[in-house]
Amino acid sequence: MPSVMGLLEERERAARQRMEALQAELREAEAVWERFVIARETVGEVLTEPRRDEDVPSVVVAGERPVQVTAAVSGSVVPHWQEGLAPTVLAPDYRRIMDVLAGGSAMDCRQLAASLGLEPVPAKVEGVRSKAKRLAARGWLVEERPGLFRVPVARVGGS
Image (cartoon, rainbow, N blue to C red; front, top):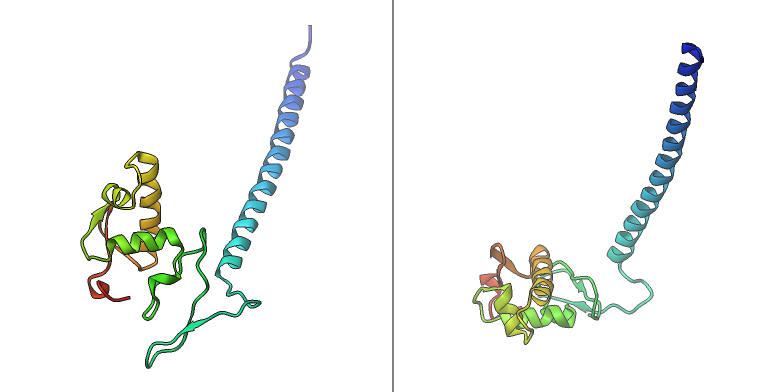
């Protein structure tokens, strides 16, 4: 019959092996996590840097500093709205949303999707909602209440 001390030592050895395996797994998971953090930070830096190798046009508003504008392409980042910046700097999908809301009336995402010629199915409505929320977060639109968007009153009919 095995001794009590022998049984304890055996269980201690098993617990230590499990602990070492879990520590190795934790180190591996931390390394993967750190790579994602670095990738996200790098992409964020790249997207916020102005492109230096391209000729970037400027929009000048009387008495204001020039605002640099990059050409809009599908999938491009929505710039923060500032005085003198027209919706023409937005990617086509965002410009279409701005055009629909240019009349000044607020619309919910289902109405907005239908006005854009999209089927008002959940997938399309959520795509419009995502774009409208991005426009609102960057100052192009106002979200009066959840899911109800409009162009700010001061800019209706203007830029």
